[in-house]
Amino acid sequence: MNDYSQTDEYENINKKIFRAPFQDQEFNNLAFYLHSIYEYVFNGHVAAEYPNTEFYVVDFNVPASNNDDDNITFVKCDILQKLPFPDDEFDYVFSRDKFLFFEKDNFYDYLSEALRILKPRGWLEVEYLFNHNITNGPVAMLIIDAWNSWFKSYNIVYDFLENFEKYLQETGKVESMSHQLVKVPSGCSNAFGEFTYELTLFVMKSTNDYLAPFMNISFEVFDNLVSIAESEMQAKDCDLSFKMKRILARKKISSSKDN
Image (cartoon, rainbow, N blue to C red; front, top):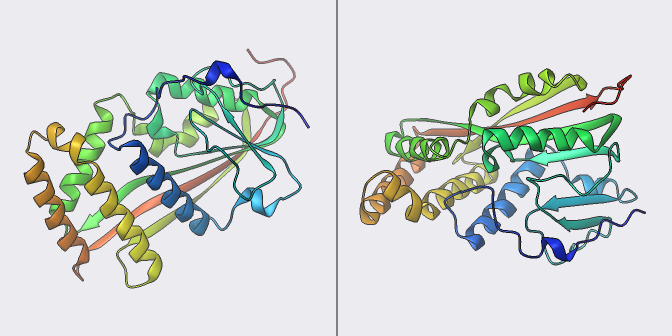
């Protein structure tokens, strides 16, 4: 097994990604809940399904331990730079919800690195959440639109969400591409819908410190808007949902070394 353990050079990495409107603990909670939703929607936890396979989790910040998954190694590094792995190293590379973490130019670099470390004929899997839809919830939609506008103000390009397959195809490095698109209900009568509704509400409440100034309103007014949005989302005639997408693509065998 190769040793990709953490090194001292990554100890003081600053968060260069995701100017998202959350405090650290709130972001950790959100990441955990979203992870649970992805597992439910796309049926499974890869590391648990393949206990004899070694997995490496790479990010700016990683957990202190790998919990119950003995086949996972966490590597703390600057993912805006070259990843600490050789070319053509892995049979499978997985990325989830990184679109909102990068500005456009940085995302191209990140995608290039993901393909660099993937073996020819290895599989790239990308998952992400996008496109909240709501009917009969004008205030809830107002907050969601402000969230989207806030990201765009930091050059987070939503075009990637709609057209990622095109960008991936344009690299000329992949083939056999497919996708799965799932509409995820929020606030329905079943337990899963209630869970996603609670997550949506958590996100709205957690963005107060950032979105209120961005919307040029007071914190009190923002909190009142969230209360109204909560009532809207609980109404029987309100239909709130978002989409989750999974894309699979295989890296081509190249006759010459790519730059």
